[in-house]
Length: 263
Image (cartoon, rainbow, N blue to C red; front, top):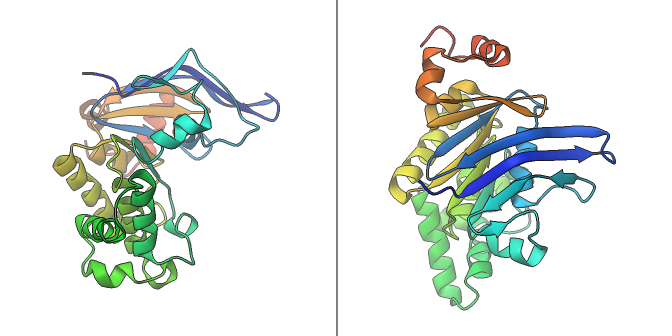
């Protein structure tokens, strides 16, 4: 299996090097579903943003290797990253109200993303693609929703719109950073099922970042468990469901999870 992302000994620090947010993180991502799980402050979201080179300028990033296919992400300049973000790696953030433009209609925002990666596409083609993508993420009446502004739709529909915006460029990898934590439980299940369907129908590879071990065990085939900036254990989901984890932190996390007692 060819690795899409390969990271070795990633170190990320802030405050002039005083705060080491990520320490010695190593993992690879093939054509699979990998979860990174840990409590708030463990560094898991920082890793996802480092892959996209979306950390603040004050961040100090070092690694033995950080590659996406043939691209050395450590050396990649902004021009190179503009060809990768969206088109090859998509990023879904936690809360759509902070990601969607409040003064643009939903359809226009999705169409704008498509137009950026397909500048020669006609206006009608671009908007048609946006409507098709809204339908692909299971939004009923996509033409009506496309005319709405972000404040006129629910959180669940906003997250579907965000997924549509990220997928319209047909990326190889999708990084989903806490994609359901801002949603009600019933809506969370709908979004997670949608991601599973997209994985099946589109062959999507994704990296799911979450604090919820139960969500990761349901969605992923392999899990990396982070504590205080380090990956303390990597296990396949079968072992996780059986409770076959070795590190003390992994065991504590499992006991605190909704999974506990259901293996």
